[in-house]
Image (cartoon, rainbow, N blue to C red; front, side, top):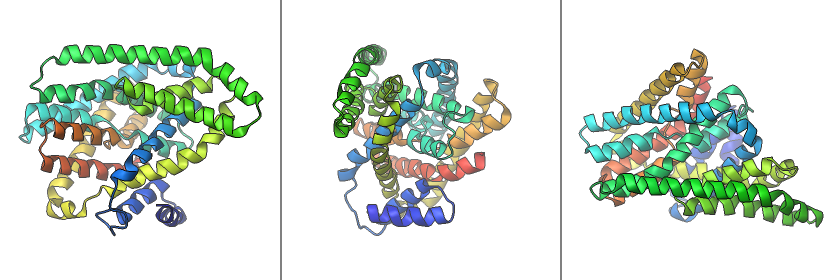
Length: 367
């Protein structure tokens, strides 16, 4: 992994191309469908997903609760409108293609989600996360992370002929709100004194250990409540940003974030099935184009509806046109629930992977 990462990223930086593309290409080369150097992707996927966790923690560190409060209209207004518009357009296309209505609902919702990891990494490279384009993208991505909660509950319920969907969603949302409230309250009361006690010991590895405990502990709590690990890490970042140890923690966590994120991007590249691409190339190309075009149009339209300038709305359309990492989880669950057949699932996973690989190029075009 490290040899492939160093070699490809060095090459791509020399030709002034985003390192994210380098990681994706490296993963495709060494993966089971490329040179086959690493055949077992499952063994590293869990570790790689922690890259997204550390990325979200770093994003939380760059914000404060006060700054986040100023984003609430975009978070719940623009974020909700984007998710609904994109989901309806993509789900409607799947239904028109001949898929079952329940499958179309899940497919539309899953494809409406964008890649938090790739988009925020690209914005971070340009120092644009706190700029207007970055704040708008972050608001939409945060809402999408919240939307994953009811979707995870919805999939098995749809597989069970839809019984008790509203009750299950209500319970999940109440549980989620309670967990988030507990994390925020306990974090604000406990975190600052705890960091001061540890910092007074003047032992750097203790501060690193506490930072890791805060990130992974918050992620564990949200995951147990049916939320994502990444959302818990983001909340942990917001809480640490309110303390005087923000910059020290940010420096300590940077190596973890860099290595694990590179692993995440490489595992995405490893899922490119070249044999399927050869046998069903036209269909996959049609699906990829459909995802990118429909999402770009709906996101741009929603942006204009919320009075974003045309240039900014178009840029958001290009930047968020891809599907994201949560789609893999939802498609796997839908396959287990019998909503999506294995062949359709493989085509969708490959199409999502290809849209993610195209994101850096779309970001340049959008800019």
